[in-house]
Image (cartoon, rainbow, N blue to C red; front, side, top):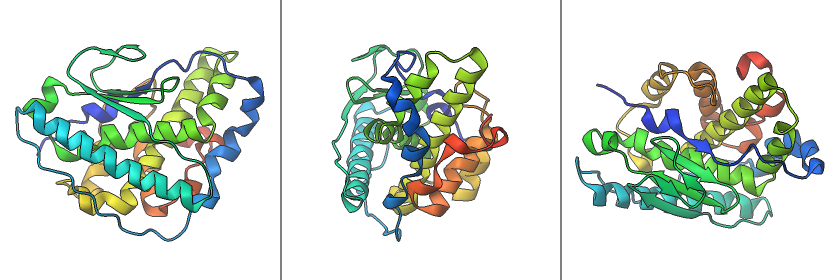
Amino acid sequence: MRIPLTAFAVCMVAGLAFPAPAAAAGRVGQSGLMGAMGGEVVPQKCAVPAIRVGSVASLRSFHEAMAECADTFWAGRFAAAGLPYSSPEVTITTGGDSVCGAITSSGAQYCPDQRTIVIRITKQDLRDPFRMNVAHSVAHEWGHHVQQLIGVLAAQAALYEPASEGARKLLSHRLEMQAECFAGVFYSATLKSIRPGISWKDWLSAVRNADESDIHGKPRNLALWQDRGYRGGATGFCNTWTASRGKIT
C-alpha cells in the first residue's frame, strides 16, 4: 500500500519570521510543558465521513468533520485546564491564495495573525485520498493553533528574528515537532473514531520514511514526537523546547 505523506510534508506556519514582543521569549519552555492539560485519555467519537476518489465535495466534508472533531477535543482540554480557548477559522480551498497570502506549498498552513487554518485540496488528494494523510492536515495545523493560544508562536517569533540561520532552523524544527506532538495528543483520544485505514505502527513507519524537510527536520524525530504525544495523551509530553538537539534536528 502506498502512503503519500504530502499533507505531513508540506504544512507550515505563515509569517513567523516577523518579530513579536521580546518579553514573550521566556515563555517558550513553560508554554510547551502545559502539564495541567494532562489527565486520563477519554476516547472521543467523531463522525468523520468517507472520502470518494476525485470528489472535492467529499474531501471538503471530511476536512469539515475533522475540524469539528479537533475543535471539540481542544476546547475540552483547555476548559479542563481552566484556560481560555477560541476556535480558529478554517478555510478549505482548491486555489493558491489564502487570508495570509499565497499558499507557498501544496498542502496546509496556519495563518497566526488571522488565526486561520488553510487547507488546500490538492490533485494528489483527489487521486489518492488516503484518510490518515488527509486527516493529518487538520491535526497538525490545529497543533499550531494551540501554540498560538498558549503563547508559543509569539515566543518563537521573538527568538527567531535575531537568530542566526542555524539557530532559526532549530527553532523551526522545535515548533513543527511540537505541533506533531500535539497532533499525537489529539489522536490519543480520536484515532479509532477517525478510522485512519492504517495501524499506528505502520503510520509511524510511513512518517519515518517520508522525505526530509528543512522546515520540519528529520522524519524519524517527527515520528518520535507524534508518538510521544499519542502515547502520553497530554501536552505535557510535548516540550520540544528543552529537548536535546538529537531529538530535534
